[in-house]
Image 1 (cartoon, each protein chain N blue to C red):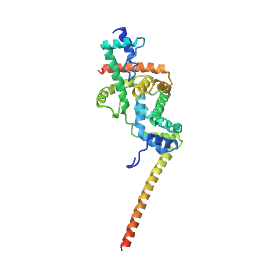
Image 2: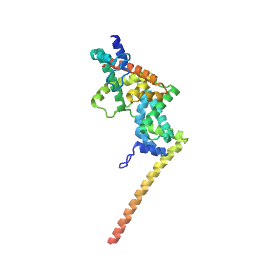
Image 3: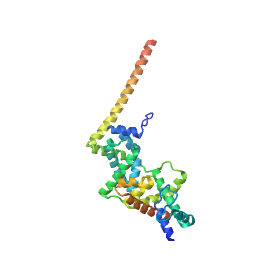
Image 4: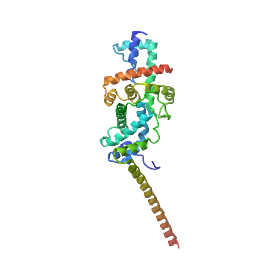
Length: 127
Length: 187
């Protein structure tokens, strides 16, 4: 391996992901380009770094699934940070969801009642 | 989310959360916990630690939501909080491990070409193990620059180091990882 190869090899680790041209510190760019075109070892090294950057970049598209219960842990952490005892906060959440459920059930019952009354009125007027 | 319910975007949820709407913030937590956990995992290389970091990051975000101005994406803001949290928790308890990461859940591919997916599938486990073996400060720079595309200036600011230090760590980290590619036949 020549001194130029070592210089190029060292600069490859600094290359930007979208960069086509290797900037070699202390070398005239045209000389570095000419070396890259003729040196198979440096071309292989450059290909290796491009692959490294490609695979590292691909990690950004892979999601690791958070452990089950993390969202609940986070809610608990926020409750604690707000100074609310966990049991009280959990009860509030439970109450809130029960209230929502009760409201929904109430609305359903009211709708059913309305339908029944309308049906009774229709039957009565028909009679 | 119930069928027929309109999905609100992150900006809307963040605005509601800023006004104290805890349910809106909880929706953001449910929606983005995997992304935050993934970043935390890449930074810490430890699932337990990553869960701790994710929890703390969301707690900090809730406390600071009043200062979220909405001129950046919610997740951009959240990522910065996650990095800061991982970094400060690391300094606090030094629990970061350096042994290879044992993954208990298979990562989910998200919009990657089949060709790249094949290449990544072969090299990813080796690369993730090699990342886990890097010194934490080097790993953080490599992950933020090469996985998440941050600039050196952003990395330096968030990790509290100079731009030169960020560049030096990136150089060292990449050289080390390139050696792993050679060892695994990824030339």
